[in-house]
Length: 169
Image (tube, rainbow, N blue to C red; front, side, top):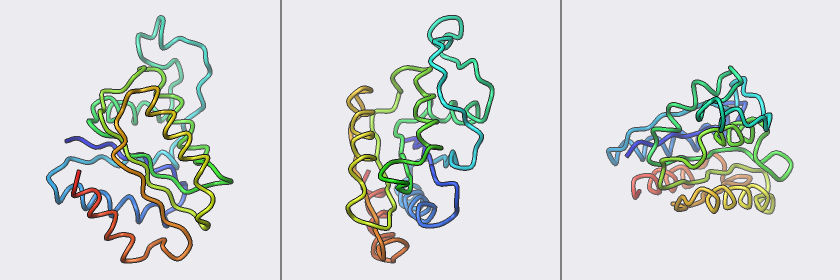
């Protein structure tokens, strides 16, 4: 299975550790992975111009780093969204990437997962609601949600849980 992992963090920290653990587990199970560091890319928000659904035939009029993301996203059998929680939601960077995949409509991927890092266990509701809305729209199956809050971040136990989750896919 080809897995595209969108890392929405602009930093190298807890979310990066979660992504690395997921990638290790997925590769150990024989899956092909591609990590896309959308949190560090220059990706503009959707303009709602509808070029993609008219003249663009599935391509966006904007020319930015989304051109690096789209091929892996289009080809993926599974997409993993990984993000720290910024003020009760996903980062602006991953949100921009998610909005821009609108250009292709519904993805080829049949599964998705969500990895969330936070300082507090009560801050996930907004990000999870967004993720579930994406799945409902696209008809993609939820493979699971893994959260890490506070001291769980970077802990051996949590990283092992994520590796095992990915191996079991």
